[in-house]
Length: 145
Figure 1 (tube, helix red, strand yellow):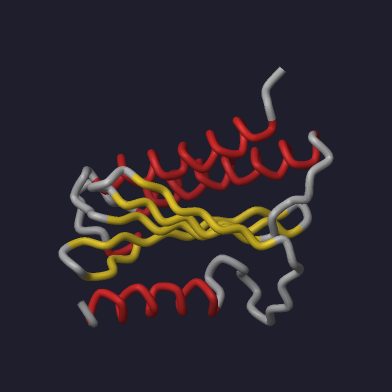
Figure 2: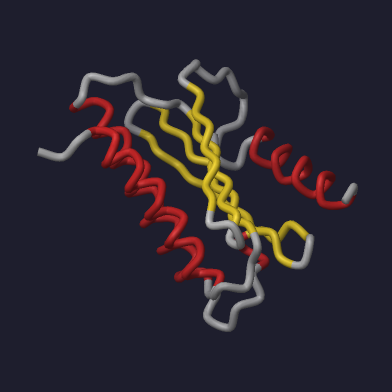
């Protein structure tokens, strides 16, 4: 039997691994936001490269076609769904939102999760004002260094 914490951790690690493979090792940081609202799961990500925030759709990778980006997000969303199922099976609270920050150089992952209901007027919870605010916060931090 798989332990709940192992599934939760493995799913987050897999999301980071997918994002790193897509980036071809050309980034210093990976930022992933995921949401779980009922049966709906979503994911958004961005990177830091050369002290600048780079959105997924702006990755200057030769193979970064729309189909490949869509496949990446779909696979990451499957991992978020896996978290949701693991929580339900273990009778644990399901996080409504999660923020992952992976630093490549020290190989460290910071994760924070919110279990409180989100009251948001945005139709797409991942492409929400919170997601874009997080991108702006990260860029502001980079600019102040």
